[in-house]
Amino acid sequence: MKKLENKVVFITGGNSGIGRACAFESAREGAKVVIADLASADHQGTINEIKLLGTECFFVAIDVAKVESVKNAINTTVAEFGRLDVALNNAGIGGPYSEIHDMDEQEWDKIIQINLTGQFYCIKYELQQFLKQGGGVIVNMSSLAGLKAEHGLVPYTAAKHGVLGITKNIAVQYGSQNIRGNAICPYYIDTPLLKSVSEDIRHAWEAATPIKRLGQPEEVAKAFIYLACDDSSYCNGTQLILDGGLMC
Ligand SMILES: NC(=O)c1ccc[n+]([C@@H]2O[C@H](COP(=O)([O-])OP(=O)(O)OC[C@H]3O[C@@H](n4cnc5c(N)ncnc54)[C@H](O)[C@@H]3O)[C@@H](O)[C@H]2O)c1
Image (cartoon, rainbow, N blue to C red; front, side, top):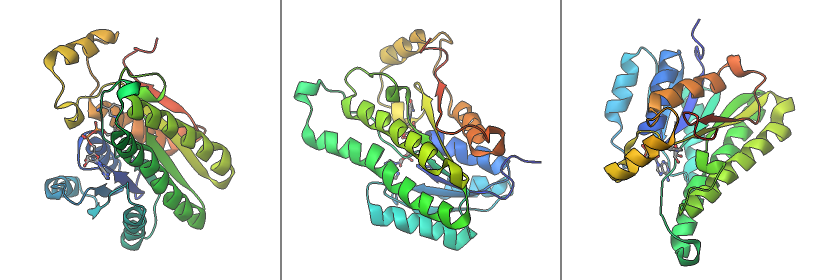
């Protein structure tokens, strides 16, 4: 028996990096997959490849920073597939590096709007659907920067800490209603998000972990499947760290 047989899995930022890997792993585990990403994203290749795995899959445009767009994406998911079982709130952007006293206010607002407020918008409307159905699972993408300062990455660090806060609230406020909420906290994962990083910085990040390498999106996807399926039925409000041992 596959772990997500016939479950409807909705993934924001599902067309790249970690979200894309989670979409493929969900399909392999029997799920129907919704790739929710920016309208500009060239998504047809992802959709075709997932369908080749023998499951249903469609793309819905979403900008998580805009509440109407989030409502529309979740309504479209339910209209197409009849329900929503698992939501991975993963869409996010990186940067900018700055000292706090020099931080540009507009840059602060942008990161918080996408990486934290965007997660809240998604969670709000996913929960409304779960309450109608009688249950569901939420997995939020935080970061190691949700647990410790990432030097200079100020609004990103603040947003990812906030993601853990709302995840804990999901756990305590909805646990009795068959709804679980958990978060994943990865260290640096080799995705397009890191494309502008120099080789020197990359090597420094690799050297910092006991495992001596960056993580792969597929390794995050395995953790996502665990949190999404019934294997983690008593796991609620946790923050699953994927860092090769760095926090030790
Ligand atoms: N790669 C890492 O090292 C790392 C480490 C820890 C946490 N994360 C987190 O994992 C998540 C995915 O990152 P990734 O590395 O796969 O990055 P990525 O850039 O490969 O993918 C991010 C996806 O989010 C989408 N996106 C961006 N803004 C959006 C918006 N406003 N609305 C909807 N979609 C939007 C992009 O189009 C893209 O498909 C992010 O939340 C990121 O903060 C990444």
